Image 1 (cartoon, one colour):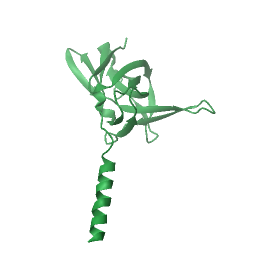
Image 2 (spheres, helix red, strand yellow; image 1 turned 60 degrees about the vertical axis):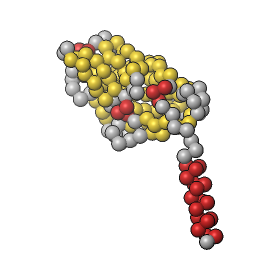
Image 3 (spheres, rainbow, N blue to C red; image 1 turned 135 degrees about the vertical axis):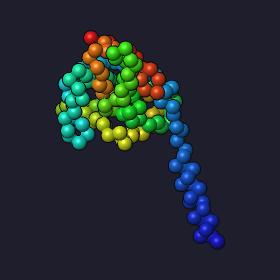
Image 4 (cartoon, helix red, strand yellow; image 1 turned 90 degrees about the vertical axis):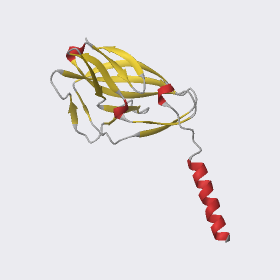
Length: 162
């Protein structure tokens, strides 16, 4: 009987600790576009070189500054971001090509880039209240569109591509 009670107590402690972190709604975070850069290609997570899928499209690397609204954890994945634009008189919504992180090596000054392109990948992050951090998104947009809106769980901002 004591063994069963100990097992139940350990299970209760494990479950309560496992769910003690508050889950946050990324859509409530303050998200700003800091920089937009055109790309010819980039290196994917498997070392492969990724280019725009059509010659009439172009890739854009978008640097985001994100400020959390509370302390807790939230999830990100590449396809939660998208490009919305008017293309040939139709509304076009295209999922993001990649979600990434850049890390500066303080010793050498070198920048390491980590891009996640697989549709199955997801990232869970823990943040403090009002913590600022940066993420990068790569979008593919038609050159003809002229501009697009970057969307996540909400519209983040407008990008003029001319």
